[in-house]
Length: 251
Image 1 (cartoon, rainbow, N blue to C red):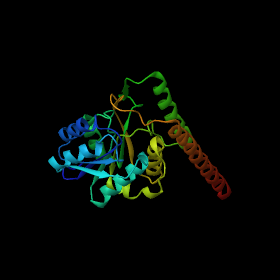
Image 2: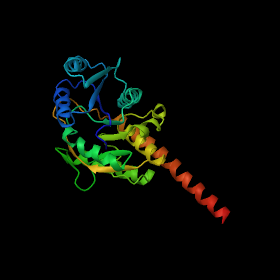
Image 3: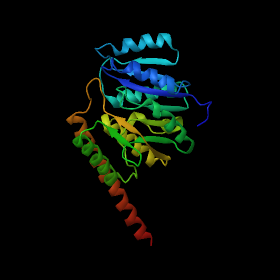
Image 4: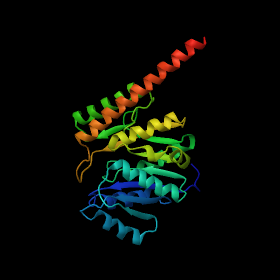
């Protein structure tokens, strides 16, 4: 990645007042040339106000206030749109709870030299999780394995939320059509990038279980992912079958 490219790190928040300050500070220290956009869903714990104070002291920090909690997918779509409207060359997404280590951002940005989308991956050689229960690891591994089998993306960690995009990749993805939430949003964006012929690569990261706040994982998020991936998978297989039939007819 060229040193002249403008980079924006998008961080969605909801009740992250204890963690957002240290995360922003570590991002600024690690990639001082990057800007940061915190997309806050009107957090009742004052997260948005705290980031406003940080933004007043640091011109690299910005905050986008949303009226209510509407889900991770909507937050990212609005953050990505904000970035595209302001002509950033590279857009990074990451969590606000400290589970994504800002110190790993240079690894993702370097990998963009040969990619259009870089995924921070836990389930590749060199990747790992810290303080995850066996049940949580099983859920993530099995979910990603199901995505591999259903969609044939060739990715080991399509549900992770630490990613770096080239501007044109986001611009071409028709984000307005991405209605998924939670981990399903991550899968949806990855599959669209692969389908568009974008170069998608994975780099190993360490994912650390949050120490502050509450996980946004819910049964509804898991159910949405299962249903949507199944529907997409069936459509993917149907296209493959139609392709085979068409080739046989021509032969």
